[in-house]
Image (cartoon, rainbow, N blue to C red; front, side, top):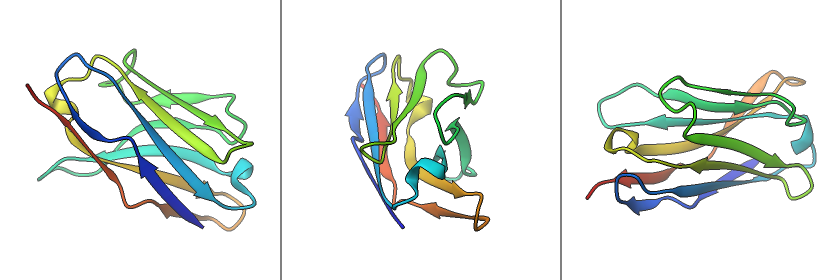
Length: 117
């Protein structure tokens, strides 16, 4: 299983970015999907989560109302729409897939998001 993130970059405070994660797996629709982030010198934190069918989502308090996670089980894609970005959102954002059948997870390589004027 491979996960490839894209869509990161440099954006000004208040701006928006949309991250994408493409998952190469025949069983993508069975995975719960998550977005994590890790800033320099800080621990990795869970930002957003979505269930396998997309019926339920969850967000870290610091991004609620600004970020939206979604998925397309036909295209094997998961997205993170990030609005009203703040400098403290600067981090490497990583896509994570949780396989509850084999009880293991998979990680992408991450994409850098920098929020700065």
